[in-house]
Image 1: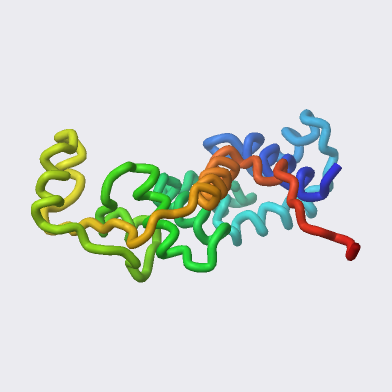
Image 2: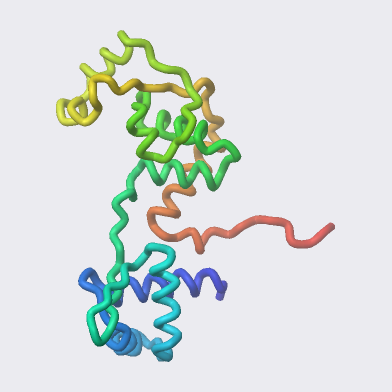
Length: 192
């Protein structure tokens, strides 16, 4: 079994065992033992501290112990997923994020959406005022209020090739479902 596969399964097991309210190290050790993992508490402590450093869990000091709680990510949305997928599949994630979101949403992408994604430099063409007004009027009312009137929208200068769009969607879906460890990397490991 792949080492990465074991790591992802163990991380998922830890997060599920912590639950929404979190657990102390001793309570977590007992919960893991029920799941078939007999692991020393010092190893669990180190693993939880590493997860805390990665901002996956939050450490709270409640004497005489520490309680670890999973952090529900506030920035886990289509915008951040598109940016992460773009970083994973391309050398220019700012440009690719605009292309992915434009293809995915089937409309020009507002500047606030691109900033939410994490784009630093917008690499696309600004949508003209009348096209933007038409776009706003065709949007459902709840979306119209989400984007301020002063917010401009952008379209990519060039369309993204279908193969690259498929790779970006693959990266987004494996990230969303936490199944990246199941994907076979097809890198050549021997010289022919």
